[in-house]
Each structure stands twice: as structure tokens, then as C-alpha cells.
Length: 450
Image 1: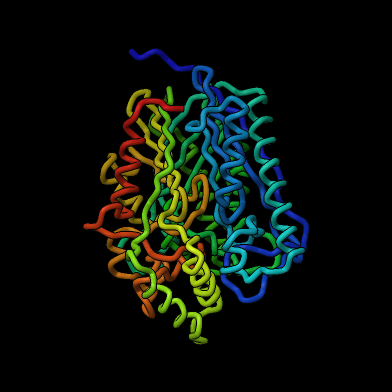
Image 2 (image 1 turned 90 degrees about the horizontal axis):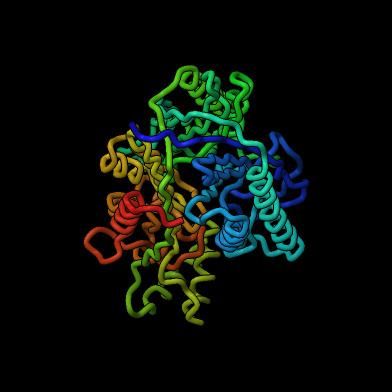
């Protein structure tokens, strides 16, 4: 019999709702959407699993996502607290009714924010959130941890649809519970792959269905609950942007988790083997960008195109002229393996992976019972399409990263994230799907590199 690894859990949360007046993130608009108040508070939540004295730290914030500089600053500060970089997971729920948290390229391309006062508000808020996250991790590490046992199971939900008309639809609902010796849930971690756009587009801050589902779970169980987002890049709730829809999604998700947590799943134990890496995923660019410049000029002049695509085109022309464009995208990847007994793998992907990534990883690692796939982990560089989505373009012509007017240059989501081209596809060196899947396979099989 394997020796029992002593396991303990500590949790904490903090409010990160900004005051009214800051621009809101989530929808491409030609005039900033300025917050007038709060519908539901925005929080950051932290769970620390202690195994044989080593902390594994998970943090989730009610934000659209963490920009690179903020993520890197938080990660460095948490490592300074004595946590291994591979043992620290930072995620965002991806609510589309939260504040803009970066004054970088997306502030201009997506939201047309040029006002210096508004940019200062965004920068100040991002710095404050970073400090808030680090303080929460510090406090949770110092909090009294409670002895527990872990169990894992997968139930389901069906309010997600594939908005790009691809075959993959997320229905898996993983649930990891830390219980007392008597079997009572202490902490419930759960996840689902669906964009948090169930609520209408508001002028008030709102945590969408993840925040409301947490409330259902905590009220029903008395446990601490934390949502971990899945591969939601091409997944939307049905219905979308609806009060009826957000209440149905919240209740359905929350009640399903409560039912699952009522009885233990399969036992999970440590130690946890962890690995972290950043992959440079190349863009599909020609040696000479003169043709790209001409196509961006045509797009910028086309008044039928959305404002965010025309602003992107203007920015790309400037980057071509001064040589400042990026040729690749840094994508954080992370792997945790609970090694006691039957292993549980958690694969964590930065950015917005589409559901095909979850499907591929489940095929490789024993289905949903063997691997839990997270998106929006670390930072939010862009969408990550699969090979088949890159080839097809998708119904929205968005998550693929190219658009029908000029499919060679960056389009769709690449416009939002300020990238000049789309990713390489199957058969090319550095193809995005191969790079991500193989990178995760390596991380999930490596020994501890904390």
C-alpha cells in the first residue's frame, strides 16, 4: 500500500470590484462602455492544497483575462512567497461584464480607448488587482489549513453550443472536492467550457453564470467554491445575453455540482507533479510583408468593416512600417498530475483555446475522468484554433484568426489581440495545434520542475 500523503486545504477570497467610471471589457465597440455601477460583485478566489508540506495554489479572478505584463508580475511575486512557479495557477473566469485590465493594444483595437484619463484608470486598476491577488495568496498560505481528502468526478451540463459550427461541444463538468474526515465538503473546485456571455451586455459589473453558480453551491453546501474555466473559445451559452439564460445556466451548473458533491467520486491524492512552460507559437507570415500592408490598407479603407478591424489594420500598417510586429505568440502551458493511485491530470492552457483542444487531450489521456482541461490560464494572448477550425474558418470567421476579405492576414480574433497574422496549420512547422498538444503532453509526463 502506498503511504498516505497528508493533505490540507486553505481558501480565501477578496473583492476586486472597481468603482464606476472605468471602461468595461468584453465586446468590440467604437465608444468605450463606461461602468455605472455593480450588478454582482467581482471577486478573486484562492485555494491552496497542501500535500506533504508543499502548496499547490489555484487563483481565479472575475476578469476577462490577465494581460501578459500583469500575469508575469503576479507570478514573480507569488514565487517570491516561496511557491514554485509550476505550483501556481492563475486563471480568469472571462466574464464579459468586468473592467478593462490592460492599457495595451486591446484598449485601442477592441474598445477605441484613447483618453489618457481612462487609460490611467485602467493602469491604476490593473496594478491594484495585481497587489490584491498577491496579498490574497500570501494570506491564504498563512491561513489555518484543514485536513482533508480529495475526490474527483465528472458530471455534465448542456447549455453550451459551438458558435463556430464545429463538431466539438463542451458538456463535461469536472468536480474536485476536498472533504473533511467525516465526508463534508470543505472546498469544491468545478469547471465548464462556455463563454460567460449568458448575461446581457451591461453598464454594470457582473460575474455572469460562474459567480452565480458559486453562490448556489456555497448556499447549498456551506463549502467554499471556485470556478475554473474550460476550453471555451468557440463555446457560447444558449440562450446568449439573456437574463433568463444567465439564471438557467447558473442554476443548472450550480445544482449539478451540488448533486455531484453530495457523494464522493474517485479518490485523488498527491504528491502533485507540476510543470510550467511558455511556448513561442509562430504566426504564418511571408518573408516580404508588402502584400500584407496592401491588404491591411484595403481593410482600413473599407467602411463596411467593423471599427475594431479597421483600427487593427491601421495599427498593423504602422508596425509593418517600423518593423515592430510580433512574429509569434507566447502561450503559457501548465500541467499538474495528482500521482496517488489512479492519476488525475490537469492541463492548463493560456489564452482562449477552442473546444477541440479539450477533445484531443481527453482522447490522449483517458477521457474526462483522466484529464481536466482548463483555458484562460496565466494570461490572455489570443484565441487558439485547432487545425480543422483554421482550415474551415468557422461560422463566425472569428476564432480561426482570419477573415474572408483577406484570409492571408490576421483577421477575426487576431484583430482584437493586435496580431498581424493567423497561426500556422497542419503540415507547417510550428503548427498551432501540434505545438500546443505536444507541449502539454510533455508537461503532463515530466517529473516535478517547480
